[in-house]
Length: 257
Image 1 (tube, one colour):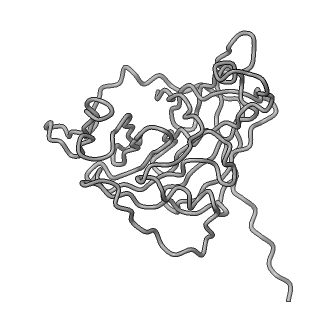
Image 2 (spheres, one colour; image 1 turned 90 degrees about the vertical axis):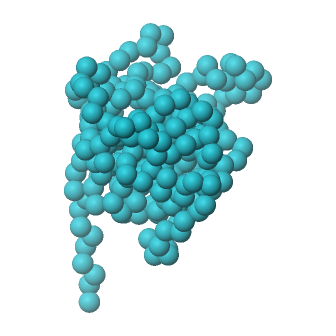
């Protein structure tokens, strides 16, 4: 079971490492040129994220089993994170440093996909990338905010399976006039935004939330496509299970001649 990190707050700007994430927010089309590479640090490159396009699946979050607790499983990860921030470094099983946060971008989190051949790397402030475990210095940036929603919090990302990630973001509360910053932080969000990111074709697809689930929640943990949610905006916090259902998207009608 993978526990979620706190959602990043709204940002005044993006680090150079994820400058390419702005391309997604501005709406890059499916016909855009292939991915460019941005020099992010002395020892690493990060490839721009792809475009928002028509995914072949439709996604809906519905009530279901909670995330499975996998904490007791043996750790067989081929790489792991030591330290955090400026003292961070990713090492292999032999202890050899394969990416060093002290000479490049600081690292605050590392999560492997189920097959343990891809790594989700968290650099802080909604900046994530994915990379092969064999070449963690050559990483592809993930979108930082939902497309077209500049006021939203930054994404937090979680593996769903080897080929998909789940992004969670929130819209800030609307009624904040006359409130202090600490009071605003204590307010529930105006809306929860979920997106599925396809690693293969770099598409970002929105997830609809069933009316059978609370409107406001935060992802507490994930295991595969099953989630544990914590409710927000209620007098007593509740934990409940949910799953993301996938339905093939209907094919578009053929043009009439």
